[in-house]
Length: 317
Image 1 (cartoon, one colour):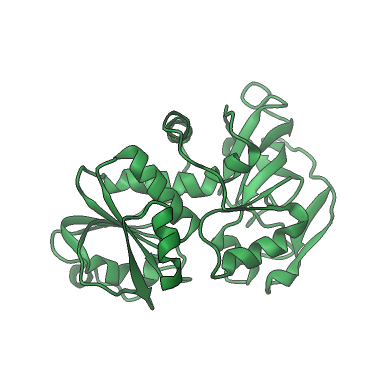
Image 2 (cartoon, helix red, strand yellow):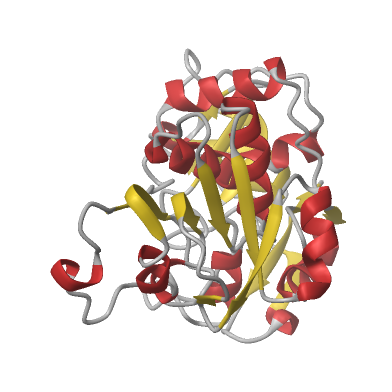
């Protein structure tokens, strides 16, 4: 089969489109024919060698949509079943979705039924599930002001769409590190845009809820911009920092404010089903910003890392 293999950490040039053996099924695992997947910032970090637990060579890819090609669980996962998968050390501890086929544990394969195109479905697994789970955890209420840190990212743009569908009476502000993206962000549904400079918001404004996709690099500053009773959800690591270093919650979390998170690796089939139903009943636009083919994954990585990117970048096969 064709696949994109990383043999050593480095820049986009280490993503090699080549021939590799098609995986063979084994007990408890089934083979998925990949129809599409999203490109994620975490995969860029892994490609650069910033994931210490990942050993090369490796086929990256932490999410996939496709159909069952060979199965060891015919009742749940019959051949031809439309499926989705994300996380679970996919593309990290074992080879992932940057390939024509991916071998996955049965308990990490989620059967779905959807009339969306493969390109549209490819935007959903990691990005929409992360945004949806984080928004549920923020317990949004009418008339609140929501800030999305990392507003130009795929999850950020997705969160705007989902928040509007879940609760229409919200004011939503997004952040960007480039004033040149202000108009584009408003086109994507933001009411206002704030500049983020070195993980510090260039405003004195306060918010009821903050979805912080920059993560630990920005969380200490985000907490200072909460109204009483407000919540920050640190869900993402776009800032390239994995944990809160020397973080004293007593002094760093203002009184009467709250810090939470959402981990997309903890996937619940019912939550995924609810998300898909919300997308279809509310007619949420799930079109990707840009679509690449498998042989152009290198260009997809370059585009996602560029200042031009706003929204979700996907690959279809």
